[in-house]
Length: 181
Image 1 (cartoon, rainbow, N blue to C red):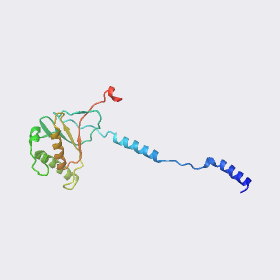
Image 2: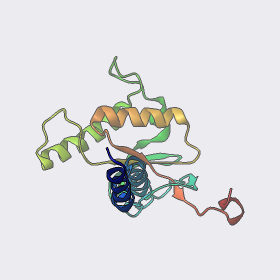
Image 3: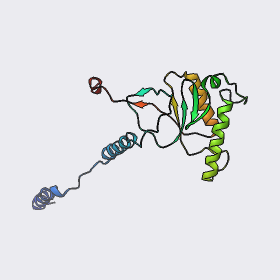
């Protein structure tokens, strides 16, 4: 190549250098946007807390979300209620023995009531028997309730057909001194 031709090629290269295509890496931008959407969805509040059943002293929580309208199982120091209807005594539930060999934690009397409610929901929503119900069951356990009884309540509800369970607590504000920690 001649010198003139090389000079012309160098001039053209310098003139068109500003039009060169540069690469833009979109992966970090997409990762950031996905993270923002994830945190926005997981921290969103979803409704109002269902009314607290009389006699149930709920524990408190600093961080939490509000609950959907749902079926509520209340466990006070003396009574277990489903909605506003008393089901059985707490002492009776704690002492109850399972009548199903493969479900040792089951509480028979509570199972009958929850199964009846689940069957009623299945019938209303045209859901086949044996399939779990879409209605969430909120458990409001008294602050003094033993965890053993709570685990038995949860297992009984699952066997009855409620696979979406929530545990409700009182929502309290973060004290100003600990908010920044």
